[in-house]
Amino acid sequence: MSRVLQIHPANPQPRLIARAVERLRAGDVIVYPTDSSYALGCQLGDKAAAERIRHIRQTDRHHNFTLVCRDLSEIATYAKVDNQRFRLLKATTPGPFTFILQATHEVPRRLQHPRRKTVGIRVPDNTIVRALLTELGEPIMSCTLILPGDEWPLSDPEEIEERVSSEVDWIIDGGPGLHEPTTVLDLTGDAPQLIREGLGNARPFL
Image (cartoon, rainbow, N blue to C red; front, side):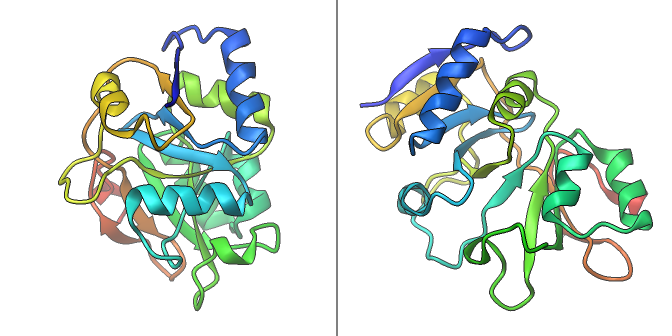
């Protein structure tokens, strides 16, 4: 049975943020709010925790995780970003976008697309997540909390507790979230390619 941390969405309590980060480092799987829906997360490179998330989502080992980053400077550690891509990232972060970029050697191989060597990167506009990332000092390995058979991600903390409390270690309750996923943009080609249209309307950038 998971434990619930009720963290203030505008003024996250430092004690609770530190506790959540401590548990991430210990190998726990958490549910946390973003600027779109809630997400599942674990420490970067934690193979056992990643397998637990795949089990919850019922995805195979080829399912790509997203690295949820603190800011643009952290993105550059894990993804190859030239001037053109940097300008687009600067214009859209923080926000409800996920970007597909070429991975650097800092990204564990099992987190990269097996053929294209790409990685998903995200910088959410959410106070709780930013506090977690600042305390953690590295990205959270993450994916959207959408359960098998569901059409939309989970965003209500009470429903989340009811449906996944037996499968995760901690649930961060930051209040109701949104039900739509992020917009996904593939930035590996000469021009951005819209993969999925969600909360972030990408069309002005295409």
